[in-house]
Length: 257
Image 1 (spheres, rainbow, N blue to C red):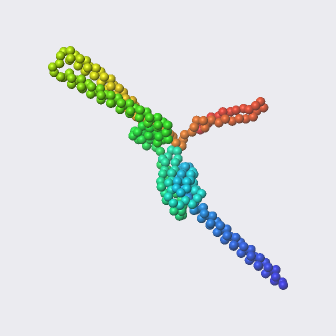
Image 2: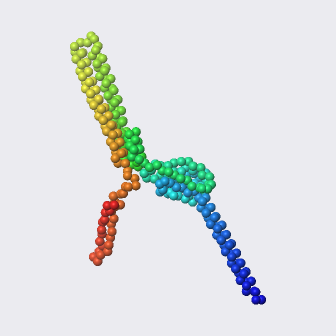
Image 3: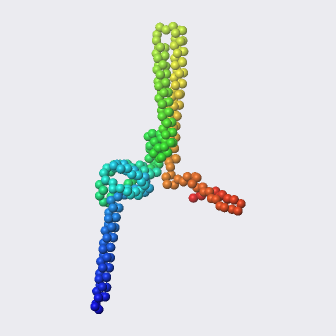
């Protein structure tokens, strides 16, 4: 009977340690299951981060990188990413769901040189490329109007030139009386004056089109956005209000930084 307390203590200690071992094993199993469940989700990263991502496939998802899709993504998806100041990313990707289930996106930064080259190729394209879509549309419309006007004046010039050549051919005909020749010379003079007028009109349209093209190129280079360093003017202002014995006091502050 004297050994009974010792045996009871040993049994309690054994139960205690057995409980701890079972609890630790159960906790480890739960953590492993949670870890595996987390790793099954697709994680989309981008360089730089903060890009808006669209996934279009069996399901549709949208988020901002780093983006953990709250669903096991398996199958073919169209992945698109965009960020101000960077070229858009688009690719068709087949996800298998195997680990590591991550997808990396590298965005290429827009440059002043690329905007310039696009504006040389087509007015307004460089502005549209640099996220100045309204300005690009204006340059494109102005160029289209100038091109249509140039085509019209070129057609009128060609018609006037044919009339002038025709009147000269009549003047070379033989057997004409003096009065007939005077009439033909008057016709030649009128045709020449009309040709000069149409030539000036065509040349003016050429100069206008060239001016639009050149100004558009300069605009795309000089006014290329300074991505990352632009701060709206109104964001520099702050309005503070404080209570006084005679009412409210307002203070308008402007930050130079």
